[in-house]
Length: 346
Image (cartoon, rainbow, N blue to C red; front, side, top):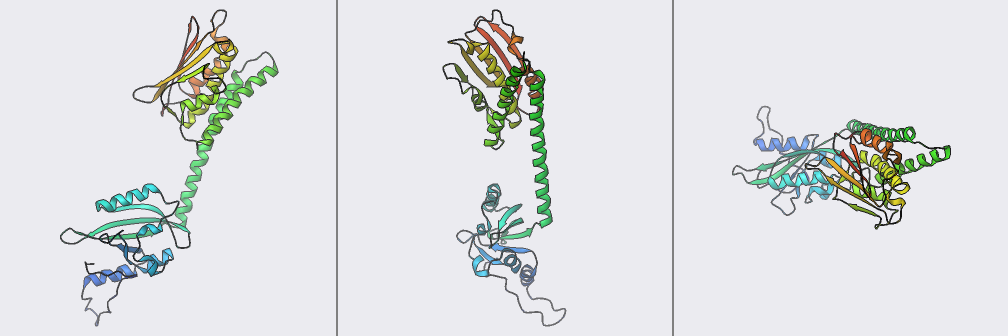
């Protein structure tokens, strides 16, 4: 390959040798024949021309993509990309071309008829003896249907494992709710369980809406305390993202704390205020949450009567955290902390 190569849909093939053993006159001609006749799809692009167009494409490339020669030569290879082509793969290819480095990666490409194929793409620069960039050589090896089927099977297995993990977390919470709920009558018991399971359902809806990605702690808290005015419930804290597996237990915990405050604490009396603040430890990895109630005297009340057994259970078993409570003259203060990283329970 040299500077004189002209744009072509294929690679010119020299005449056959005139006699056995004579061999081809130019070894570059032999290389061109090999590229043209190989079953591996190959193209050559010219970065010296605007938009780095294709100048050579072998028959294997045309057969694999369904395009005619005139539809390929003169175009940048990006015409093979489509809506499902991974943006990060495109960024990596562009960076390799810009820095004149070789790259190999899997890329989802599109044929002329719109069908897709998984492409094991290899791109390498071609320089002359002076080190000047002349061309980019790209080969495409198509991933077999069997491998695509295996990839789909693996993805399905990961999905089922994730669904199973989420279900087990939810069932563990339901088990704790039913075991720890106490009431003086069947109807009171049913009402208490229903309220806690409803909080679990709201957490599930929040996660589903966000694609089961991490959610801001403030958003999780607002899902429960949003029914109260901002004058009575004050939230204050930085942006802290909660992993999806922690959102449900945090929601149930918040529901329990809020129900206690509304039935027995600051929110049960006129003018009572609940303030909830939080911070993330440095380095990040643990959240400290302060739940402070103003406006209800602790006289005649006992913390255990606030129904905080579920709160303690969730903090310890689902969140791997701890709870510390103190009574101030004007109300209850609950200090909660739990990890947000791999050490979190559940």
